[in-house]
Length: 433
Image (cartoon, rainbow, N blue to C red; front, side, top):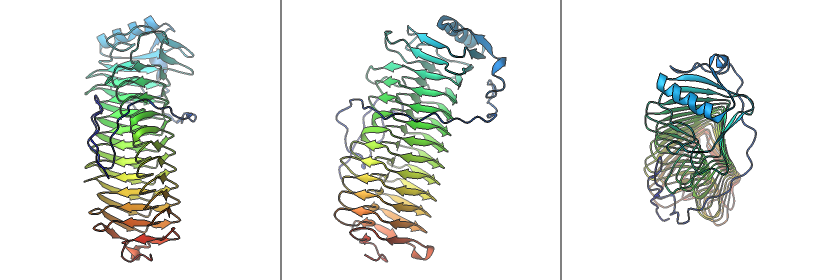
C-alpha cells in the first residue's frame, strides 16, 4: 500500500496524512444520488440554549418578517445590533438573495438569532447573482434554523469553504427540521463548514458538492448529528462528512454519498468520533474506503450501527478502514455486503480494532480478505463475533492476516468464522482454515 497526504485547504480542511488513503490528483466535482425524504421528528423539541426559543411552540413569539429579502436583511442587522432576536419568516416564502454582504447573501450572525421558517420557507441565492454562500456565523454568533431550507449557495473560488453555512471558530449553528441542499463549495463543506460548534437535528443535508473535502459537512470543531440524513453529497475526499475535531452521530443515516478518492460516507481525519444507532450505507469511493475511515491516531466507537453496501471502486476497503495509530471499537453492529476491487471487503485494519458481538457477512474483495484484512503489526480482537459467508477472489474469504499481524478470535466468547470462500482464514490461529 502507498501513503497519502491530503492537501485540501481551508476549514476542516487540511486532513491528516492517511496511509490507508492514496493520493488525490483530480479534484473535479462528482454527482450524487437522489435524496430520500427528510427525516422528521415531530416531538415537542428540546429546550434551547440561552438566547433561543423552544422548537415549535414558541415560534409565534418571534418578530414577523414579511416575504421580502430586504426586510430579512434588515431584521438580521437589527438583531445583531440589539444582542439577538427570534425572527418568524413567512411560510411558503422564498427569500431570494441577489447580492453578497461580505461574501454571504445575508449579514454575518454575531449574536443569538433564531430563524423560524415553516412549510416551504426557503432562503436561496438567485441563479443569475454572483457567487456567494448563504450564511456566515462569526465568533460569538449563535444561529438556530427551524423548518427552513438553505439552498443555492455557491463559493467556487478554490479554497472557499461552506457554501450553505460557514461557522467560524467560536460560532454555533443548530439546524432543526431543516434542509441544507444543493450548495457548491470551491473548498470544503458544500453544505456546512464548521470551525466552531454545529448541531444537525432532524435535518437533511443532501445533494451538496465540494471541490475538496466533505460534500455534506466539513468540521474541525464539535459536530453533532442526530435523527438526520446525510445523503447524496459529493467531494474529492469524504463525500458525506469529514471531521478533524469531535464528531458524534446518533440515530442518523449517511447514505448514497460519493468521494472521488477516499471516504465515501464518513472520513474521521483526526480527533475522536462515535457512531451510535446509525447506518452508513450505499456510499462510494472512487479509490479507497467506501464507508467509514478512522484515520491516523483517531479514537472511535461504533455501536448498534450498520455499515452496508459501500463500495471502493478501484482500491482497498469497502466498509470500514482503520488507519495507522487509530483505535476503533465496534459493538453490537453489522458490517455486511460491502465490496472492494482489492483487499478488505468488509474491514481493513492497520492499527487496533476490537469487534464485540458484531456480524461481518456477505462482504466481497477482489483479492484478499473478503470479510476482514488485518495488516502486519495490526491487532484485531473478536469477542462473540460472527464472520460468515464472505468471499475473496484470491484468499482469506473470512479473515486474511498478514504475517506479523495479531488476530485473537476469543472462541470461548462465541466467535465463529465459517462458510467463507475460498477459505475461512489465512494466518489466523484457532481458525478452521
